[in-house]
Image (tube, rainbow, N blue to C red; front, side, top):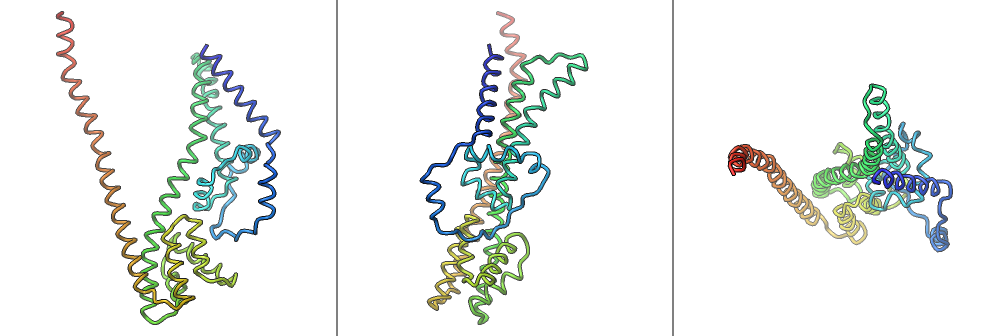
Length: 297
């Protein structure tokens, strides 16, 4: 009964996925009209890469996965932070899902040739489980890596704020302070800041506009706040040195608080193996006595 249920469920999912791939649903008329009449969006500052062997192997499944609404808006923003295109991500998901589905079947064939009979249930259940894992693991990895990059960007942003404040204190203008300070730092975060300022120069827009766009793409609200403060200085002539120093101090305080919270969480996780070892020791001590009591009754 269980084998029949699993086979029927897998066959239904496979037929449904094949139908979606061959006959993708058409978008709603309202969505098409809204997309056609909307104002053209600004070119993204974050670059994307669309190469790799997984992209070439899984490219046929990209259209079907897109028809299912994948990836979601949140995951798409995380992919933009990593500089990875949605096509590459969907192709990787498809490749890992198919690999997880076929790997137990290949292992079952090898065991059968070796003289062992793992049965029919093993490749079916293990294949479905590994396929689900292969489908979900890329999403979890993208979210984790994007969170790490955002944290590193906030650390770099606090240093950048200090550099801008020092440059402004030396008598430089807002534009020159932003441009001169970004050339000092190294790493991924300063590369994105340099890209944003270079985009502002090439498109003849204000640097705070591109910085705000970069903050929205990265989902780093502190960068959008920096852009708002700098825009006041650039358009209204407001003095922002004290504001930038306060923002840098607040950002460092927030980072220290997060680091302390992460350290406390790691300390609590370290106590779990100790508790498990203690419980195992109690079971080891109590089992002989419990056995004697039960056998003596």
